[in-house]
Length: 411
Image (cartoon, rainbow, N blue to C red; front, side, top):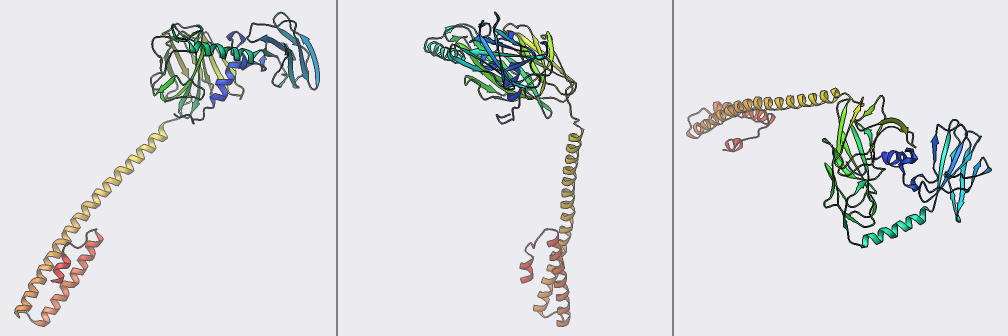
């Protein structure tokens, strides 16, 4: 597997799925800022706009919010939860939410009011300032000595899968979280061994350079900087049956188990670690089955079983391989048989040629001794030459040229 694999899941799962997770997962604010998230449980034609400062939970109450729909602007004020509510909006119309906090103007991405259900929009103030402050803190922490400690996997750590021919492409999105202010030395690299049968593992773009990927594992070297170290890897998992079980041991604690697989036909996913499994739709329209479960301690294992996998019959491949083998065997037999037949024919011709050359030599000796009639000499000599020409022609046809015969004739 190479980086040019055509990782469609980068556009589907790695980016879109975080937006599909509920707010309680505390995703990166920059991933949800200004995005409209469908809320089927809300009344039709209702949009709520939540305004927070830097992170979800830091609600801004009493904040004016503008919502523009089809060129008309409405205004509402946020409540104690930081939410401004707009009701009875025209279905199917394009809208945009705006708010200004401490001089910072925030604008949502354009969205359409759904024909059924509502939408939730979050505007996050101070993202740029928070990012700059975090950058400065990380620089200060990186300049200091590493301390002994532990790391855990972050809440957005997940496993995603999609199909490619007769194999699964499996993606690990790993957030390695160091909650200390200083760099942390965990005493050894963080090593994740892939399930048995994994092939072609590779690191994806955006993955930390501290991650080294080999065919069957990824090794993330420390010390780990304060905050999050992002590692994204992928590998192939071939299969030839409709059921497949994947076991993965996690070297650090997981706050929750999240596994998503592209839904094809009647595919289902199950695991002793799951407490729920539901279909979710990514932005590009692909449907994933998303299984989720509670936290796992360091050294914990997930056992995930995929059922009703799409399996293509191996019979055409086996038939093709069998025919290829049969053709090869027939070719070898014909070649060997041909060489045997040609060998026998050649030997017969060589024997006859040698006999004729011997007769020609005897005839020449008799001519020189004057013991042969001149007319009889000419007739016999012509007959021997004619037959020798025929034999040399047949030797050429069976792949053997003259073997010193020309020298006998010249003599």
